[in-house]
Length: 446
Image 1 (cartoon, helix red, strand yellow):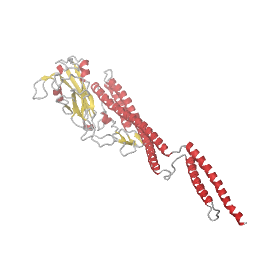
Image 2 (cartoon, one colour):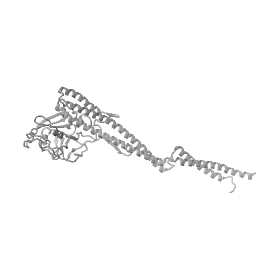
Image 3 (cartoon, rainbow, N blue to C red):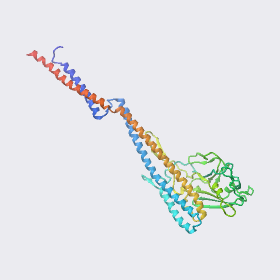
Image 4 (cartoon, one colour):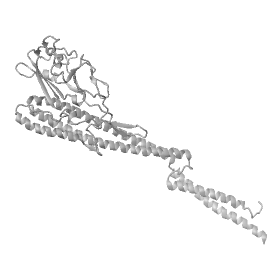
């Protein structure tokens, strides 16, 4: 190699190598100090883009989980109010059973009525329970109900399948086909409650027809329906497995899809709701026929009366995309909706034995509505719990995937850092040596 002094190529090459080693050492130092393999887009352009999207996903899933937890907190507030309602209704049933007992005078029943009214008012207070300023059980968060609203439907599946509207009471049979032993000399007493008012009427089993087109005969459901029930109830004829229409406009059928006796309220909505339906069979001596009563009093509410309303359900965003949400519809649990009070104010009356006896069915129906709502709330709480678990699993796996892309392997990076550090020191040493080689030219100038 020629001895030159203008261009010290050995020093130049060594300097370039030193600069490269300095850059590599700087990169290694950055990765080791940050713990990340990718610190900016220049480190790995595609990996950086994928990693950033995953980071957004992880943060979004974290917010989804917080939404789910807040939703569960809200539902626990509603559940507490519903549990209080259940406890109140248990007490109310005790009170009405007490009031139906003739060891109490009508004055005693008036005292019970005052306590009864106070507890009914508490149910309204429970319905106004709030979460973050939002009322929960007053109907303002109801699911969608089609126009003109739903009609109360009472269904009895304890009667023989061959029973229809024209079957005489003397021929009524239970589910297994055994006769109910109702005699022509017996009396049927029917009671129902509408808008807090109790209506009661007696019918002789052997009765003249209440419909001019039918001859006098034994009392039938058809004759009965065209009597006291006609203004408020429609007997579903012919007797089928179809009960009516629910809030979503879908047809409702009996659980076993077998024909059943169904009474449907004439008018839709809360104004037209019937709170209870009670039958009593007594013989000519006034003795109650318990076996027949047990079958005839097995009318249960299968469709609840609700006013038409838009979909006001609470929506909890539980996903990272639009409309990935859980909808929660909370029913109206005010006293008017439960049939315990009329829309004009008066509460259910228990001031006489007959009224108290009819009120038992009303309380049982209200309890069914409230326990159904408790079941709905519990089911959504359970779902939100599973949703939260799923979100946390997705968040964990997404975080793990992002870590694989972006996080540094510290063992490998420390090895690389050590290597670059040694190379840098070697380059510095060799640069000094290259500079010393150029000074050898001075010996020729002496």
